[in-house]
Length: 378
Ligand SMILES: *Cc1c(COP(=O)(O)O)cnc(C)c1O
Image (cartoon, rainbow, N blue to C red; front, side):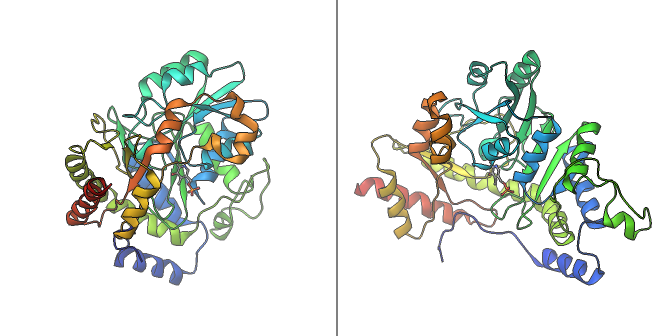
C-alpha cells in the first residue's frame, strides 16, 4: 500500500523452507528446534543462557519476576519507550517510576535522572536501548551497584548492538528481546531472555511453562513420565515454526544490521544539512543495531502537517513514542510524580522515517528530497 513503507520484512525462501520442514517433522510445539535457536542466540551474544519466549512483553514480565520484583517495589524506566515496558512492571504489582532521557542527542534514559528517582522502594532499573543505540551502561551499572539494584535491558531495538565490546542484553542482569514483525530479527511474534545468571535462568525456564518441572518434549523423549509444579508459572512458550524462522533470521542479522547502517548514514549525511531537522545519535561511538531512524523537527514546525505531506508523497512515517506517562491509564496514576521535560519535548517533535534492510539508497534519497521539498513549500 505504501510506496515507501516504514519497515518491510526480510523473509526469503529459507524461512519458508524451514517452517515447512518443521510442519512435516511431526513436532511443532517447543522442542529441539527451539533449543537450537536458543543455543545459536546465546552464542551470537556470547551469553550463558538464552530462553525463547512468546514475546518480549512476556520476557520483561519473567525478567522482573525472576528478580523478585513485586508489590510495593519501584522500577525506574524510561517513559519514551513502548508501553510494554511499564505494563510488565505493573503485572508484578510493582510501580514504574519514569526517568527522563539524556538529551535531544541521546534519547536513552538519563543516568542522572535515574539517580534522582531512587527511593528506598527502588528495586531495579529497566533501560531501553533506543533505536539500537546502547544506553550509558557504565554509569547505570555504577548507580545500580551503589544502590544494590538489578538492571534489566529492554533490547527490543538492540539485537546485535554492542557497548564497549559487549553485546546489549549481556551487560545488565537480564536482557529481553522482541521478534515482533517490525523488529531487526522477526519470527512474527516471539521473544528471548538472556542472562549469565544460572539461578535466574532456571527460574525463568520454569515460569515459561506453568512452573512444571518437565516439559511434554521431555516426556515424549522418554526422559520422564510425570511432573511437579514448583511455581505458579505461565504459558509463555514459543513454538518450533517460529524458532525455525528465528534461526534463519539470526543468520541474516549482521548483514541486515550493516544494510541498516548504510541507509542511516545516507540519511544522516543528507539531512544534517537541513536546519529544520535535528538528528539524534548523530555521533555514535558504540555499535548500533539501527532499528529505527528518528529525527526531531524544529519546534516551529507542525508535525502533523509534515507527516501528512510525506503521506501524500507515499512515505509512511511514525512516532517513537507517545510517552507512557501521558497515556490515560498512567497519567491518572503517576502524572503527579513525573518531571520529564526532555521526554515531552522529544515526544512532540520526533518523527520516524522508513528504514529496513531491503530499502534502496534511492528511496532514502527520495524521502530526504520530499523532506527538503516540504520545508521549501511551507
Ligand atoms: C516491540 C517492543 C516491545 C514489546 O515486544 P513484544 O515482542 O511485542 O511483546 C517492548 N519494548 C520495546 C522497546 C519494543 O520496541
